[in-house]
Image 1: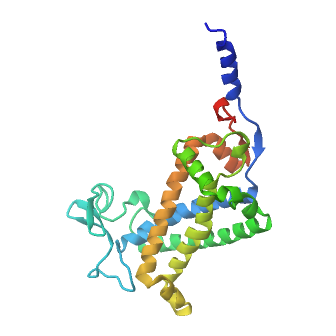
Image 2: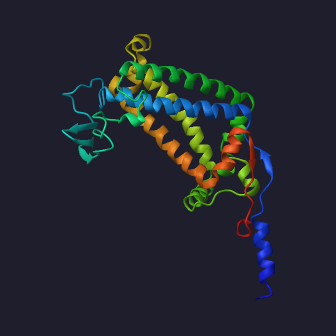
Image 3: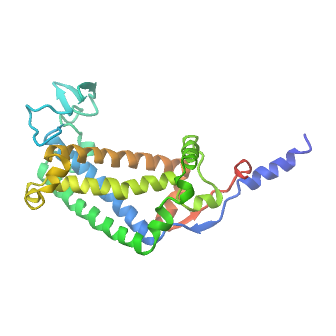
Length: 282
């Protein structure tokens, strides 16, 4: 046995010792996180029910069965397919045709879990208001408490291309911040969260309003802004896809970073800083 091995073993043991508990996530942020998660979850599933009423998307002011769609989720007999910009992809068993459904989206991912456009709209519109009201309150809190400028805004050094590129490469290698660096959001997290708060949420709300004939009469500029009701519906669908992608990536990162520690942070506010390994230290 080499004489240096006991020293190396001690170093390894100390390098993986648990870090301290810190209070990282304040109560208003935690409340909004769970309300937002529930709202998006219900809206995605109820939106799938609404989409099933006419599973085609168009650009422009008009859209009907004889117009040219850019996206179709349909079936031919017992074969499901997705046609995207003329490229047809077989989706039998997943979309268009499943064992228990001939709808574009199967009952497993819809609310309600049977086809009812009226009920789907009730669920969708109710949680749309929940999303809007909670987002406005969260934004007011973030501004007044300086959570936005202190925790979410990119600091000057984080805006540099080299810093962002390094952070991107670290995430691609599944190397997440350790020690004190884990106390704050990293640049990619900040960009993702700001994109949802100031990009996806306003866009999905405005396009949703644009699809309402009653609101078109009150705010006709919405139709001009998005190039017609059908374009607004397409953008709304793409935003929903953005929410779905964000959710999947977010959950994937939570699992990789340590689900128990991450969940504790979002439930109690307390987070255990991951210990720095020897190779992570300067």
